[in-house]
Length: 385
Image 1: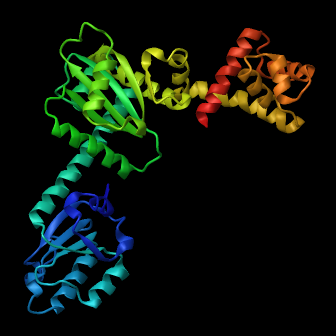
Image 2 (image 1 turned 180 degrees about the vertical axis):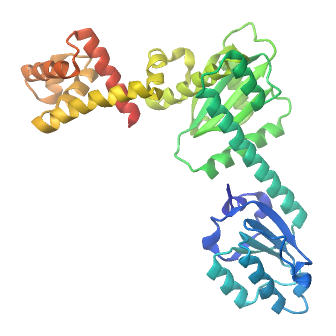
């Protein structure tokens, strides 16, 4: 769905002046139509809910009463907004302004712009937004369905018929928490840079959740199996401000039928970069995170995590203890009891007692298994935060 307020960010709307109905800018639009002869014929059947109406009001140039009558009919049909080109009128009757405020229907005045150009720009924007959501939906299904290699290829072709035999991917995760409209504007800026440089290598760009997925593709993978240089070149050529993103690069080439694997690796890498505070990371450097990150999407694993953490938290609440805090400190001190006791201002025997109690609660008496389990729990705890 596209809100009327989104259109105001398009360059062609720079000369639009909102004069009434500001509270209605959140209305969604589905179409742009031009009002010309309908008022003369007193026929408004072609106007529908969600229409953004453009008019010069030429039909009222000899009788301003027609303006109010037209606006009333349009608002009864629940149009989203009205744009008036100031050919015949530089201002509107007060009664029209009052009506727009009452109905929360935005009214704009504009000049020096062809209505047909506005229609084309808005239609292009709507189609772009539809593709934007279509691609995101396909990527979501690609990543969260059990697919055979042939099914992955089928999904890949639904994303783009231009994909070649080999691909490499990167994921740009926005550092700032932004709304959908801000992300879409950033997406369009990248596409604009792409259009300015037609000599760039072949790639596919899609919005996915809070970031952008870039898929680099061609027939034969290069002799050098590392893809990070090629992907980094693309980022530089697109003038992408890397400081605004956590960059996750899947730095090995995959055949197209492993597109889901490559995408997942690049997303995991970007998420790990955010988690560890590193701006840019290669999937080859994930290490243990290769195993830990899939746990965050596994329903059974997360249920087990919550079960164990609830045991520790409940014990602390009922006994006025600090098992969870002690485990966090021990993990941070590389399981050095002496160092943990100094940091917590507790006797070493207190630390040992809490440790033994936690082992019993988690039913893992073996030291190695216990420390591995707790480190994993603490990772998932931080990930939840």
